[in-house]
Amino acid sequence: MFKSFILSSVLFLSACATAPVAVLQGKLSPPADQGYVVVALTLNSFDQDGANAWLRLEGPNGRSDLNASILHDTIAAPNKNAIGKLHLLSLAPGQYTVQQAVGDWSYTAAGWPQQRRDQMPIGQRFEVKAGEVTYLGEVHLALSFQSSLKMSDQHERDFYALGQQYGITDTSNIKTHLLSTPAQ
Image (cartoon, rainbow, N blue to C red; front, side, top):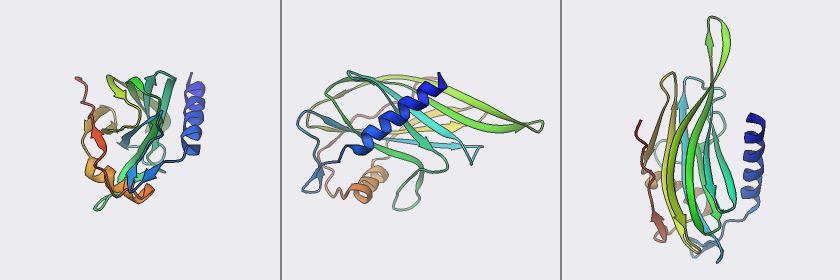
């Protein structure tokens, strides 16, 4: 199961990496038959060398797994960068569900390395409309022996990062539909 999870993540990310991001007059401009979704996946952990986070979306065309690595991914910010990845997805119109967040991290117990996987259900829906850009906010995983999940509005940081990465200078067409932190 883990191998299929990793494989689907790699395939999805390689598909996203090949899709060019359309920018028109400083604004994100999705293709006519698609919508853009912006979501930040961030994490912190005791494991500063190998912790990873995933966010699973389910929609009209199946599953999409987004990832972030504590070691390799950074979201640019004007003051302090965040550990994680800002995802910009081009998706077909329709209803989507953010199913769950998953975190993998390692620790040492009695001198022996241990691997831990924390799965946190989310189960929140959002809609993608053709030609629209939707910001879902930040999904943050704190990976520890009492792992937690928190959603928040980090649009100032994330819109700054969009500007740095894609040259976005006008965010007025980005609609906000924030995910809320699930009850524990």
